[in-house]
Image 1 (cartoon, one colour):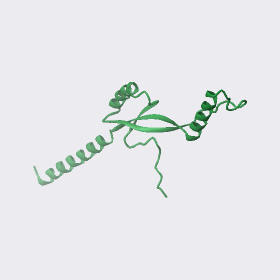
Image 2 (cartoon, rainbow, N blue to C red; image 1 turned 135 degrees about the vertical axis):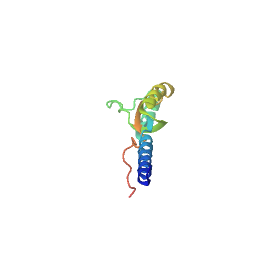
Image 3 (tube, rainbow, N blue to C red; image 1 turned 60 degrees about the horizontal axis):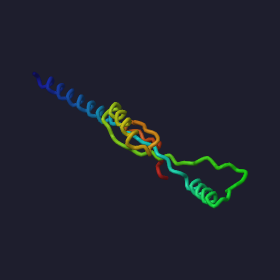
Image 4 (tube, helix red, strand yellow; image 1 turned 90 degrees about the vertical axis):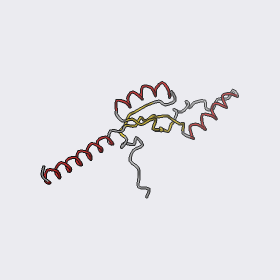
Length: 120
């Protein structure tokens, strides 16, 4: 084999390794879970209303209780090498983590919180 042929094989091998390693790195999946937390205003109003009702007083006679207000909290639950493994983990997580209300598998390059600001 000539020097030119060896160089072509080496270059081809390097190109293949680069593409396969980047493809493997891009296949990582993260299982995200969502939980909810009451807003401070709603929590304060709910506690006040419940304590007044406990003493036999009505908080307000004409206004109905406000609808609950929540913060959505996305939390990573586990990381996986493929979407299929992530889906399997999602099925188990629903049973093991009942306080999480919603699950979603996303590529590791996607953050469900949305784009981050520059901080300026």
